[in-house]
Amino acid sequence: MDKFLADKKAICVFVLPAFLIFAVIVIAPIFFSSYYSTLRWDGFGNGAFIGLQNFVGLFTNTADGFPKSIINSFILAGLSVFVQLPLALFFALVLARGIKGEVFYRTVYFIPVILSTVVIGQLWMKIYHPSFGLLNIFLSTVGLKSLTHAWLGSTDTALFAAFIPSVWQYIGYHMLLMYASAKSVSDDIYEAAKIDGASEAAIARYITIPLIMPMIKICVIFAVIGSLKSFDLVYILTGGGPVHASEVPSTLMFNTIFFKYMYGYGSAMAVFIIAECLLFTVAIQKLLKAEDSL
Image (tube, rainbow, N blue to C red; front, side):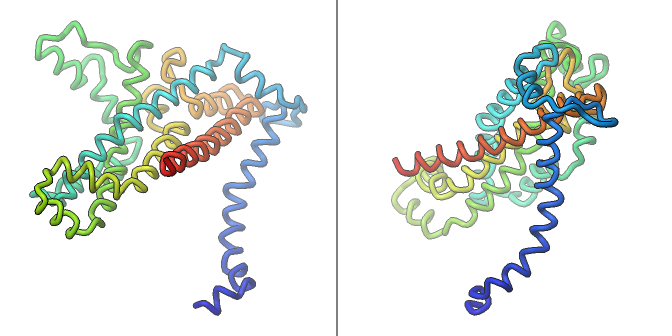
């Protein structure tokens, strides 16, 4: 193996096919989008080169709601980090302690992850339905009819109504990552802690969580980046409406390109999303490394 790893030409031969596929599928579209973002182009014929005007328009043209969509994506990222991940960590810690029915609960929590996003969207649309939705029926049953709402049709509630399913869907995903990391901790450490009289809460706080912190950090990055480029579930539930109330950058980009035929302007949004995800990935990694060095 050492002899093979020392042969740089052999490594290049094996890596080259994967790199070419990656370049065609990922890198080339980024370059094309970057080029299109400098054009005023409707998708037909030749576009006119306008430099960085599309990027300036993203933040000066308030009619399309791009700044608001960015704020909405930050709200979703906040919900993911401060609601989704703590719940996932709690379930992971409980299941990793070997409770009765561990395999059953682990499977149940993971089911939303493997379900089609379209199915989940249809499910939550039934829950939110203003006339026969489960949520309004429940509120009416318990005497809170005044709180019934057209959850996805109101500008006051559409944002969080669209984000709650997104947060709920991936709790099981992060739980499974943390659960696998927690299960890798040696039982000898837990037994030593129990002999010293440590409670389950103390074991989780002072042993399990510090030992699985690298996986928690990865989950934080996944949660933030996934929120910044979220699209499918929000688009199915609200399409970004009403009146851009639940708009996120990806839904706005899709509508701009395929319904308004503003390919150049939509490409500028795509480039912004890519740059934003890269920037936040680097920033989070540096922030977490800085905390480690303290």
